[in-house]
Length: 219
Image (tube, rainbow, N blue to C red):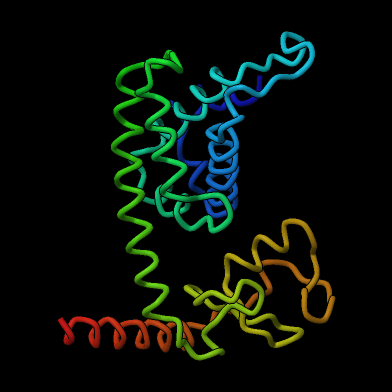
């Protein structure tokens, strides 16, 4: 079973799961699975021939919790988890903690992994609140500071040589993994052709610093 293998891999090999290429997708996949399995019907879900498909909802939940536990000390992982606007919610993690502590559910899981997950759930709640505050703080960012595909504040802006579009480095890097073309004019493009725009990055950093200073002065 793939997810069982992943729970073992993340115990000793964590870095690939917080990489730029894989980090956010991994966190999103975990969040989606946790959200689905902790619904009212999740742990009661039945399929025909479960042995054939190696499907056991409670075992699946244990493996998901194990992966969260294995990754729980990595700050980048926690950031990726809460940045997932589709599947992450504080409520989902609260439900998962209740399920783990329910005598009726009888979830057999290592005590240390359960404790790690409970601590992580509390930390994620704080991380999400912090992220929400930051998003509100920067919601008036100039349009030229926003990634044209993701509509988020850019962190490392680069220029595409053909279309002259300014885009976040990570966004275009992910795009080029699947499509070797400029998404704005369809010209052939490789990652080594993008042009670093430190001037715009510094403008964005100045904008963020100004907003943070204004926030501090209001306290």
